[in-house]
Image: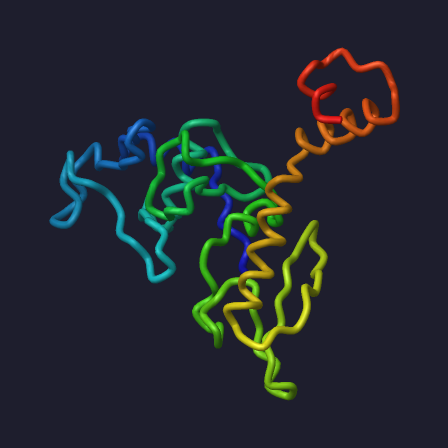
Length: 196
């Protein structure tokens, strides 16, 4: 995937002159009339073939979510902007977050368009006539087994993904605390004491 185009201070300044961004609705509108196709007050941008809203500022196109982030927080030095709800056109500031590549990939909700099965986490093993399930965790691929049907493989993927969701950092700390309580370490939290 190509690196996103960096938004400079000059780009931000020009965007502020040409556009109005409503952080609550995520909508960009033209602040000034720019020819026949861009009139003041009209919604700015168009949805690209990848599903992202993009807006031409000066002579360059920018993805609207990156532009929204830059207008709200300033230039982006690193990382990626993620749509929390997965909707690539929902550019409300509360729906955007700064993440790394792995964090952004963790939000994928549907299989790649080139997928032979159309199911997330499932590959076809033509040689064996079976379906392989797998998940990527912390940048490493983990094989989840071979299955007779794509649906079974997808179910294995979903189970692994839900287990990953449960093992969020705060929950890991809670599990360690529960284990300490089970090991007879003094425990002051009554809900954890009751879980022995």
